[in-house]
Amino acid sequence: MHKDLIIAILWSLSPFGEAKVGIPYGMYQGVNEYMVFIACFLANVLVFPIMMFFLEHINRYLIRWRFYKKSAVYVGQRAKKGSGKKVQRFGFLGIVLFVMIPLPGTGVYAGSIAAYLFKMKKREAFAANTIGIFFSSVIVWVTTLLSLEGVK
Image (spheres, rainbow, N blue to C red):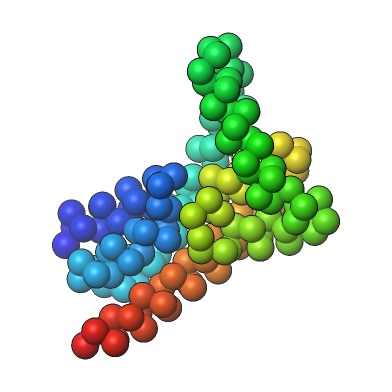
C-alpha cells in the first residue's frame, strides 16, 4: 500500500500525469481514497514552486543550448496558445479555469508556464494554480469513486 501511494504521488509530480493520473492509480490500487486525494493534491501543488524556481533560475542557463531553447520555445508557445486568450481576458480566473480542466496539457505545468510568460504575480499565480488543481483533483476523484462503485 505504501508503495502504491508513493507511485501515485510520483505520478502527481510528473508532467505526464499530474493528479489526473495519480489519484485514479492510487484508488485503483486500493489506497485509502481520502489519503490518496490529499497526497496527490499536495504533490501536484508542490509542482508550482518547483516550476517557478526552474523558470526563474535554471532556465536562464539552459536556454544557451540550441536543443533546449528550441524545446522551450515550443512548450512556451503551446502554453501561451492553450491558455493565452483565457489568461489575457480573465487573468486570475483564466488560470484557474485552464488548470482545472482535467485533460492532458492543461495542468499546473502549463499553468505555471503561462503565469510566468504573462508575468503574473507569484502569489496570485500560486493561488490560481492551487484552486485549479483542487477543482481538477475533485473532478478526477469523484469520477474515479463513481467508477469504482460501478465496478463493485
